[in-house]
Length: 212
Image 1 (cartoon, one colour):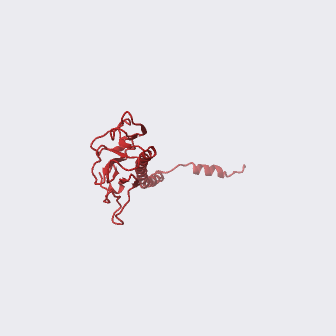
Image 2 (image 1 turned 120 degrees about the vertical axis):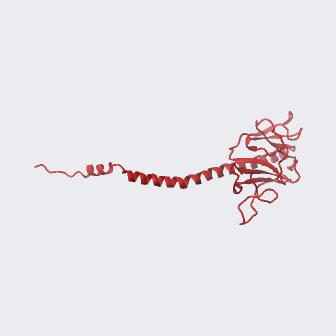
Image 3 (image 1 turned 180 degrees about the vertical axis):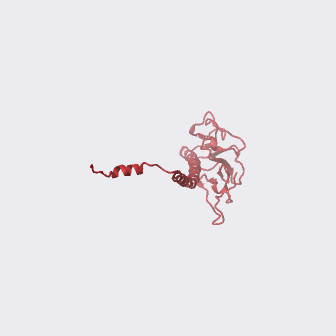
């Protein structure tokens, strides 16, 4: 009578290959759902925050470049809102700079890229995560939507300074940011002066930023 050999490998394979029960699948799906519910909002916040900070840095870098070009070339240099990247959009101010801007030597009509001027830099459409507006130190709209710096690096378009305000599309004030430009032309990131009373950055006058 032949001896029966117990094949443990075959038995193990049979067990491992049996698949999952419906209850096990439901448990796994529930765990994955909970993990996604926790992770997705955090990921979305991170994406929004990175986009916002990127827009702030782009504007601050552009303002600093405009000023440095004015000083280096001993001439007037301007940065203006532009929707076509070939001319200044102009207007009474308050429009969104997310459509782009240009930097140019401004030796003719102030705030206008003329025939004798040189286009120095073009910035195309932004990421549309924030609305970017140019404001006066008194929180009014900046007429003409342009800033001009002279050969000494001073801001020619305002004696009291100006600032760019960044408001997310949901207009939550704790997400608002600003880039300040003093009348001497120096730019800086906005700070908070509310201490522990709030978590809102300030406008150029020291008050809480307001969105929109």
